[in-house]
Length: 252
View 1 (cartoon, one colour):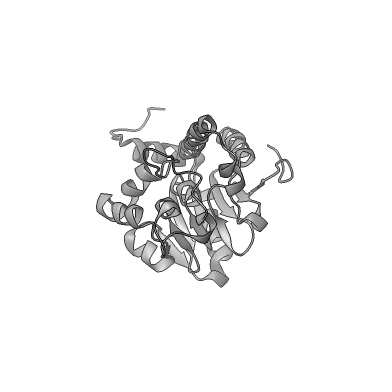
View 2 (tube, one colour):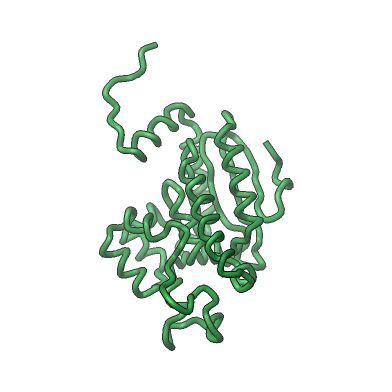
């Protein structure tokens, strides 16, 4: 298993059966790049095969954000063909994370918007700091003022001349599964960014921890899950994810 210095945009640390996976571009609010996608795919392949890992905790470096979504520098340079492929790249990467055999927890603080929230939604569940701000805000990028953000006031690079644009990395599938169709539609239609308390009320996050206790509480949660038998964690995740019935145990 590689050490935490093996990657350019992500840090990985394995300790006491917990894989601590940290997006590490704090100066860019941990925005996602093609390099990040490639590194995440490599890490989840390796972690899935590591019998010493019982749980993965995904988080963001710095104080401001878990992940601010797709890096605008990447988005602005895409050709029409590349734009199609970036959607497939993100969906394949997040699906790989979702299929990881052991539990994956997204520990969200600060901003988790757009592709950043889509990344968190690919985890088994999300816990949040009370300073979290989350939303699938893509629809606002080409909205009329005052709802259009300053970063796209000169034009939304993701809005095609004809046809529509929507979150492309699994959010339109996973958000309704998490909070129900009607609530998901409200968030998607408005592009609203909601706070941690509202996210908890909607069932988008499982729990909210005070910011000054966040790391400690996440660590305690990870430690408890990591104490469980890895084979049982894998089995339970598969049964719940795919809706299987567990009629009787394997004879042995």
